[in-house]
Length: 431
Length: 175
Image (tube, rainbow over all chains, first blue to last red; front, side, top):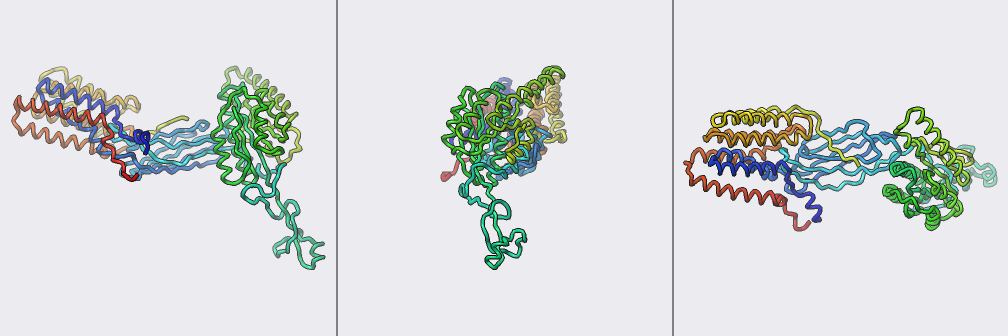
């Protein structure tokens, strides 16, 4: 046990204990000065109450067991769990304080139920935008019933991550990627089945349908042979987040980054589920990356990087990002770039990536829904501002379209058009 | 990050400890009338104010509710005439105050039961002190001895208050 940890969980007198102690001392002084025992009789319980309260509690940090999980789908986030006392501490003497991460909003009042051994909690939150956040564990303090002494509890809790992204992303991993491999990563990815490209011939089984019988080969061999097909969905995909600050301001940038992180988490999970290799880069001041790989461990690495992604400075040249990408990722990897395209430097990143051989698809979360959240003008003026903003945005997107297909992502809970584009890359304009 | 503490659901107000405190404070105030005709108003008002603040559903009001009660009880104890009954009433008022503290309406119900150690140990000490006062002959010399002992007790308590780690369990040598 470290010194810091032990001092954090040591017994603390609360202000009320000091108040009782001071009152007791004053009463004792008054008793002696007045030569009267009556203040002394009042002082005695007040002086003894705090040590008695300390003796009634645990002699060390209370041992607690935290169990919790996240439920719900879409915008709904429900955190359910319990904090159980494993020693003689009464759970009703625990004061538990929780933390609601940014990006999640209370949809109904929190519910806590105290029992002798457990505190049950049930929170209903709402993710108004796609998000990926860690819900920190609660802080618990044992406090005696009279509120004189307290002692913080120390317990280990695994991180609870809440991910909410548009539902269309669940099937985005099924698209065909440009750069494919036979057996990427640790897991053989080739899938032999009833659909896809021709793979080989094998002995027919009674369950094989007639349309899969290879009639010519069967006639030559004199026995029933059937075709096998290879479903080759594996490939490489790079998710690149432009995390440089823009002229939109810190709060808007922060929210757009949060939305991008959530979308990247959803896309990564979907492709990893299809056994594709996924790499992630976050371009802030420098390029933080997770190299291309597949498997469950890669999912954890990607999530960790996305959770730790922060905004970088604004004056970082775009070319630096493209050069850094080329150091870590081979050319030809399908690259999904998350960028607000708010500034010229953000727009410039696309051609730099193209020149280095990365086929880029830009998924651009639009700042318009965020900037028009708190209208300060009249209704008509606000409508005009939104219209002008939309026109400017359309021009920006059209400008980027010269270098790469761009999806203008305005409805944050829908990415159907993006998924549709990845499935049918021939579509000219999306967004 | 938005930290928040969830208060327990609304429960029955702690009537019994409040009534006990009001009765004890009221009696103590009544006793002061013999020496100080108007002090009883301070005692009653302070006690009523504290009890009222505790029942207001406002956390800040509940936090400071103990202050007027303490002031009222201390005033009553100082202004009371000498006698066995005032001694008993002062001690009882202190115990009623502790019981009232333990049944905090902002916390889960059953506080007075869970806080019984905090009330019973002082009650035991008070019982011994009152029995001694009742049975032993008092004189100026014994008051001086008592004062000396009290100074020692204050010093011991100050030492305890300054070192809350003394209440910690010793860590195991093998941990």
